[in-house]
Length: 438
Image 1 (cartoon, one colour):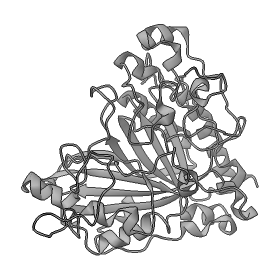
Image 2 (cartoon, rainbow, N blue to C red):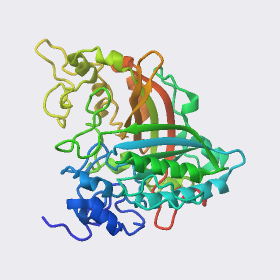
Image 3 (tube, helix red, strand yellow):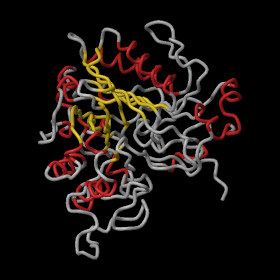
Image 4 (cartoon, helix red, strand yellow):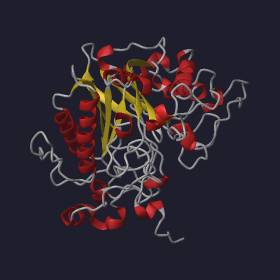
């Protein structure tokens, strides 16, 4: 079936940017990059979504795996209804970084910073030099294309008091409750400002991290920073749901953009009270650094691991039968009368069916920060989930997990943050402008 000219796939809009207030940019890529980077993929595959990404949902790619020669040429758009990096397919490399405003910096300084950050991010996401106001471009990513780079910005609870905007701080930013499984490091939690960087090339991702850190100048200081990774696109013979460092397929039950209630579950609707109109089209990100106790986990047999999770390790299918996409039959029992998916299995406890329909879009990165003094790997998951309201998404699910998840003995929550991520910027706007200049 041929596509119409105004089809989002043809236009090159990602799921993040469809129906946005402005498209921004031209989508142009230099002739040098087109010839040297696109290869056989051709111009039609240069913009994220043009080769099927618009139908993907965070944990997966399109129907056809990207040729390795096209990976660097894939571009996400900066402007749109939603910020990029929420429904964008998982990238191979990521950086999460939180900043605190410097003493004396207030609303005016924060607005100037967001304007600078947005301008730099728009250029970098197009595969262009940063043109930093703090010096020349570092050249880290010379010769590389956009590589699906996305930069996503959020505001922490303390940002509003520091900028005199407490009256515009939404109730959804109230502090997360304490959980019994928490072992949180305050120095690696929270923050005034939060930035998520993702790309399919490590140098492109680091280039963005370095450029934004430089642009912060004296206005904001890094509070914490974490590095993550995922599988590189094109290394499997077909698109597959990602695996985490425990070897488990992770993200099977994610909400999908094609579902009728996806927008209302993940994004803040427009039409709310004027104080919070700046969040229309935005979302709330819960960020958790979850250390996996891999030595303990790997001592379990595969059968026992599957009982802990509630899914087969080989293909992610529920223990009740079927394939990865088969709905879990939570009532199905085996010949011995026992439930095939145990009562305390992670997949059962976290399922929407057991949480009043609560859902969140999980979009994590794995991490490995070396070997600890006791010889165990400091590795696990940089958990990032998105929802229209964390009190209807993350919090009820985590409360359930906290009370009896079979996976709990094998993970440790070591850092946490909650951030309000405003909607995307229209052409000519910077991210957060509707808050900071209202």
